[in-house]
View 1: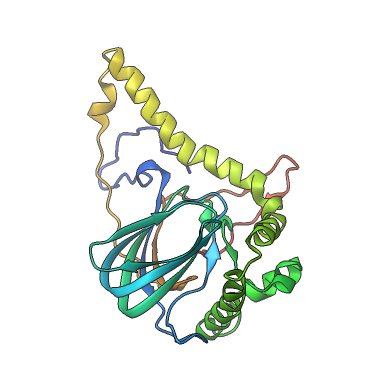
View 2: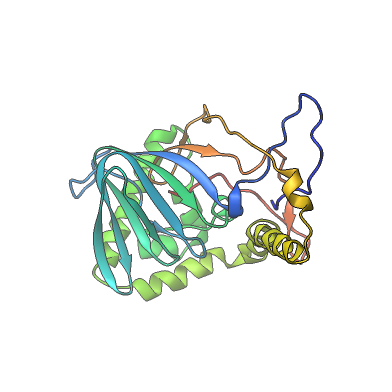
Length: 262
């Protein structure tokens, strides 16, 4: 959702604006489940259009990444900030108590499915099989661990080759969502940037009116913890307004999916 037009606050009613720049923010406690290769951590996956950043606030570990440039293992220690662009397959490894603040570009798009798990090729080739493998049904902890292990199987295979084929499969799985993502981008991050442009134009013209509309917003730590891709999530809402259904050019609704990423 884009920034709201300034509205004078009613007495006793706090005004809550969107998070700055159309970003998303979550607290993440990385899974400590041991995987088949003896490492503990999260589910390998890739984002199609969203960059992601980690701010390490506790513990130790690393992020394993795979791009067309090759494999890398980047250490994560308290105070580190690490980020990567779309097309970077990433897997968080927890060496002990790893906790992060995660910043996501294009808030609204990750929530709408801008991520693809590195499942084995036969699963990626079958949209129904992919959805079944990605879903958290029954006991969520058990399902999240099963999902992680299946994605790790595909990730270890991709380290030996086949990255271009994975990109093609990822596009095929998500292309029906692109119109809805375009709407979310236009009404969220693009609208936030356009607001800054209007403010700059106003300042150049000597119009200082927006400076008199300053606001302070606060988010309490979410009490509900979710099973995300790479750990237990505390996800902060983008705004306090309900999200309306988004429709593509055909008019068919694109459902808002549960947060899968990270």
